[in-house]
Amino acid sequence: MFVLTLCVAATAMASAVKSVYNFTMKSIDGQPVALKQYRGKVLMIVNVASKCGFTPQYSALESVYEKYKGQGLIIFGVPANNFAQQEPGTDQEIKTFCRNKYAVSFPMMSKVSVAGEDKTPLYAYLTDTTQNPKFAGEIKWNFTKFLVDRTGKPVARFEPAVKPDSPEVAAAIEAALKK
Image (cartoon, rainbow, N blue to C red; front, top):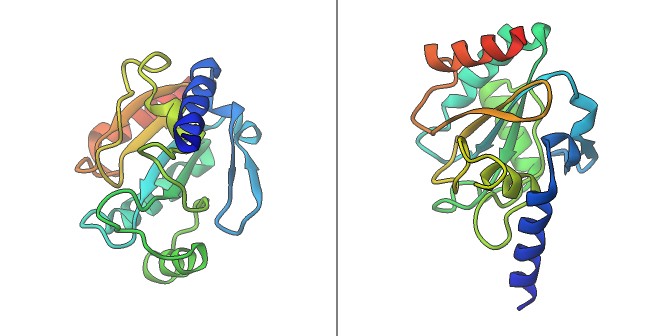
């Protein structure tokens, strides 16, 4: 009953929210990260996992980040263990893996749930069909990418098989950066 109450509360809160800037996450180092500090930036929020067939996308995410960060793009890696237990590590293990294997320099958040009854509020908002009908819906797998414009609104969603450095993602990023 308690979990159901939390889920309903997170969904109700997500329904009342108007942008990602209303959320605070925890960094992979345990520090609060108020997304409002990124107001005016374009954000790509990606649920990641270290033991997934899509894990090599970390390289492409890092490339995209390096290419566009000077123009205002911030990528957030959000580790989640929701799909086939493909992110079983601790935050420290995830951080070490990302740094050592893929030289990740974009911000990484603390591991959360992105699906199910214990879904973190940010993902409740991103997947809420009343708030974001064009880009919402449940996360189906690791490496789903949400592109958020400078006002904090989702403007694109790319499923896991779409590579972060694909022409369609680049076009969406460049369009969002121009606004």
